[in-house]
Image 1: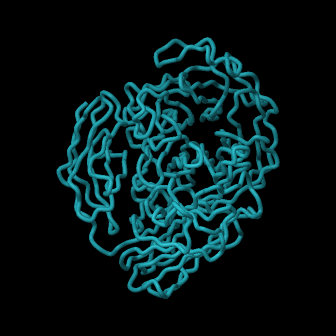
Image 2 (image 1 turned 90 degrees about the horizontal axis):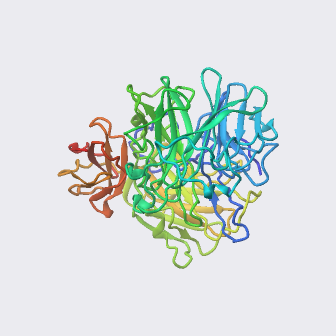
Image 3 (image 1 turned 60 degrees about the vertical axis):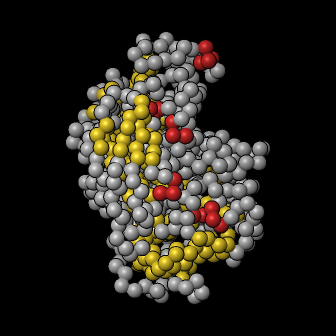
Length: 607
């Protein structure tokens, strides 16, 4: 299969365009990240087939960015964080690579897999062509680690406990970090009962451990509401998981990030502890979580990494959850990040699955990257040329990746049509494919996506809107930014090819502007703390609103956290992600197809 760099070519005709402003020259993107996610092979014998991607690491190296993820049999390269091309390496583990650690020291790019026993570590000075050598063919034994399976006999470790004499096998979910003084450190852990660990390592002659592992910190869900397991943190008595270590140094301080409470729910998030030295002691950040996205089409933001682009802008990646075919079916998300002057870290997931600009220079405020292109397709009427029983076309406008339309036949010419209800200005379209009995368990030459999009003013006469172009590749979450605004009421998908056994689409998402006034700000916002780690927020409904963003934070001008709620799901929300003993400020904004309201009055909630 041709994996050369993909240059997206869109065809847009002027038919139906009248007095529409030209969009900004900057490129845009929308989550999930538009790459050719691989079909998973782990469930071949169970006949469970699905595309997936998780545990991303994006590493700037040379003049490009390199994206590594779980079980991909290779990695992706980009020069702009928008267009990604797959690289097939000369060396790779037969059973794939899970939660890889990847890091650049400026001249080399190092790659380490998650492991429970000593394994090779790879290194390359030519990642463009995938030419890897061995940094070491076999890591040394992890100091103080018991053999796999023996950790069941180890006592649980809690914050404040003495350093353990024995630790669980590893290092699983590793992260390699090179400090400014040239010293290297390894962080790791994916545990229910144990903490994240750290240790210094020596890479002067291969790979060697320096000293003994240090237990750094563990989960504390009795105080940190967002570390509780389950959908919306409702499985109070279920064990939660700390995993996905990633170290970032900013302004002389060390931010050790971690994922919790579990990847198989909407609340998978990123938190951070902060220290003045690479191995601690670490202090919990009271503003946690830093990366959190429990509502919307893309749910979940945990287990990724933080990096700077070539302009100095901060970014954070994560593993949004789908979980239909298997509970660990996931995609990759990319969100702007920032550090405040006082060191507070944030990941901006507000409208985190709507189109955003990809900056072409330094951007001071991540909010400025939101295009303002609103969702036009929510709950709109959809029709299809054919439908497999129980998989109706209505599923493609519900903003739920776990429901989908399935065509009766996977043949070229099948159509899926949206009626937007009135003439709208179109700016971008995203086609999200699903896997229903797909029957694929790895890459193959016939796994690619071809289709075209059309628009119409009246549902009778159709004009080309966009289409996939060579070279062929799979497009599970195909995103198209239109080069010019298009006026239309109808949008139609016309099928060409997918590599799966069935044509299945979870959501056909259309973005743009309905041409009216933005909604009014929500009134009568109330926030009541019903226990130390949760509060109940309510507000008056706003006429015509498509949805609301409930926003909160530790200061009135830092409402960095956001829960997106669609209007047909009510005007109350229980937030169970609070930290005990921390005061909060809460506000609500409404959005519709015209724009976003002003923020409501900010309500203070005492500790």
